[in-house]
Length: 332
Length: 266
Ligand SMILES: Cc1cc2nc3c(=O)[nH]c(=O)nc-3n(C[C@H](O)[C@H](O)[C@H](O)COP(=O)(O)OP(=O)(O)OC[C@H]3O[C@@H](n4cnc5c(N)ncnc54)[C@H](O)[C@@H]3O)c2cc1C
Ligand SMILES: Nc1ncnc2c1ncn2[C@@H]1O[C@H](COP(=O)(O)O)[C@@H](O)[C@H]1O
Image (tube, rainbow over all chains, first blue to last red):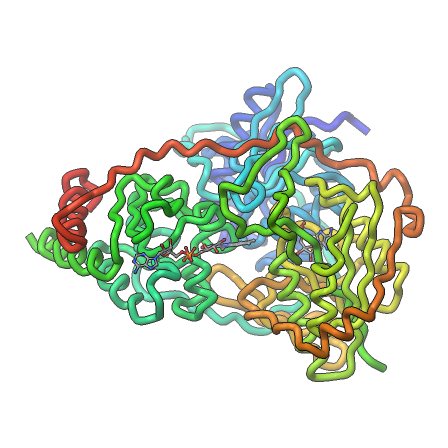
């Protein structure tokens, strides 16, 4: 078999459009490909992929494999995995990069096990050593208390990249690339699980993960009622409300409000935390915020080590005045 | 026939210990076990035990807890037994050091499942709070060819299928898979039950089954490390926090708003 070479991104094109995370992973892949002087390819999976294929080339791919089959129209984990495994074995890349989205977090480990190789999980940064071809991956471990630098010992070297860390490159519609159609054989009986119902609990208004300003509450709020006060401030600011896991576990806020390692990763311009201590697992989801505000009565709380602005005091008094002043300012 | 359930549970250093107690031995590339803070059963694995026991509340079931490591605090690892699990199997060997390599751990656990035979359902935590890999459950499912549902918040057995409410970013989906299956669960499953006095007494009398590497008869090629750790460090945080003061808390809140306006954040 020919020696493994090149970088292969496992892309996502829900609804036929290249996803934002795939654009980010292409940006990461482009840097790696350039430093190794190798080709950057992307695999897209679905039934109609022409638009996504053009977008991928504009975002830096040299080559696009459109892996098509009628049963890939919607994500089904075993069918997608089978298509990805076939593509990896055929293309024989040296490096595979996957975005750690809802789907990516499931397929990346399973693909690595199918190929009998290791996976660098949840990476914040990947860089290739041009002398050895080794991919060095930076990733948070121990709830964000530590950072590990890893490499994979087998090829392909696989890394799952955390969304919202890399910036997508500006699309360049004049970029040239090769589009390859890659039909696969799939058998519907490969699917071992079936989704029988989807229940969406999306909050009204601005989505937490897209909001420019987020106001989040923690255990120190003492109950569910104060979340109405947070909603009020968020509304004035055109933002969204988030919560710590302690607040979610107490039943004061729905699960999809949770920010952190096992909740949402958010990158707002402003993140206002109210009675949150700033545990590393919480900060793991919001350290990409441009500025953090801490309102906490404990001057020694860790959140003050992460925040740009802080007020030491009882949240209720601080928040009431903050909200009133914001109301005056935003009405002008 | 009772349904046979395996729960994977890992012993970890307490993830909620004070940050000041968190230290790294950079030469050895590992986290120092804090001397005065006892280890715990990984939190999500307690949720996995709870999920198994809820099934056992509804139907006849046998719950075996399996853990791999180089050394164990037996009183800690017996907690699932005192909650109501039936058996404890410890895969214990100097070779089972706690490394970042999930491939290795998955091979051990898969080998134990093969050796124990006949499981209908395996329940795991979504991730171990030390290396945060979230890989072992998915890997074991691949190695054993099981159907696999990750991130459950409710697990129910109906005949020979498992029904799982699994978390998605904006809600949850109900997924069905035939048994045998593997499910990983998250804290949204709810607070795990407390051990009862009777449970604690029963657990004291139970002895774990202990297997070493040799007992698992694994192909050595499968034990070659798949990843190399080059460096482990505590990230530096250099936020310079500006504490906004006022005549009282309300005044500080007002000044905070003005400051944020001044810096064009609002
Ligand atoms: C594997 C794992 C994953 C995790 N994932 C997440 C995650 O995704 N997201 C997450 O948030 N957590 C997560 N956690 C939990 C995390 O470790 C913390 O336990 C949690 O973030 C604490 O939430 P908190 O800050 O609201 O509560 P606490 O730590 O209890 O802090 C409450 C704060 O409120 C302050 N306070 C109290 N009263 C007042 C008052 N009247 N006025 C002002 N301030 C007041 C206190 O000083 C304190 O600082 C995870 C933990 C583990 C082990
Ligand atoms: N050494 C271990 N012993 C028992 N179970 C484990 C071990 N490592 C991982 N697991 C299981 O796999 C889940 C995910 O772990 P990980 O992939 O390491 O994050 C954990 O929540 C456990 O259920």
